[in-house]
Image (cartoon, rainbow, N blue to C red; front, side, top):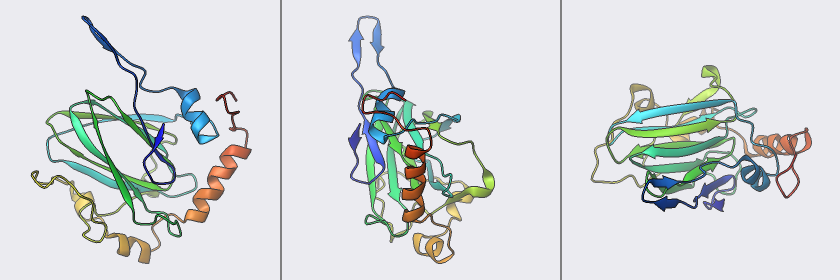
Length: 208
């Protein structure tokens, strides 16, 4: 995986094998992901979402610990996928990175616990798959306004954003920080250290 420029966020670009029948690629290799993380990625839940063009989902994040790491792929259509550093105390706090995921390049994005995630659908019937490290826990899930001007995410200007009522009512980054909703960088680092030291560590070859 290649770094997205935010600590804990990577993009994976697969090798796609094409012939007259179509194509084949490996979208996820647990050993390779674990080798980059230094511990095994624990798959607890898989989600699918289908969105119309212009839909924005996010910015979503979960309390740490345990948080929720995600491995995100677009299996139909195209999205702009965004990772936001919401960890208070992080050197990159408030920074974001964006990458296009689509059914041609077949790239995927990994984001660690404590990072925020959002995307905008660039096509209709856009289908996104998330592999998650922990199950959905409503009381520990939060959001930040994806259109917050202080956050300044560069969404495609030619599309009219469509948000759920919950996402539209999400607090700004400053409000979420003021209200103590955001994860702390120190807690995220400590949780990652526990994953590496608590029986989930792997050797450089990705073996437990």
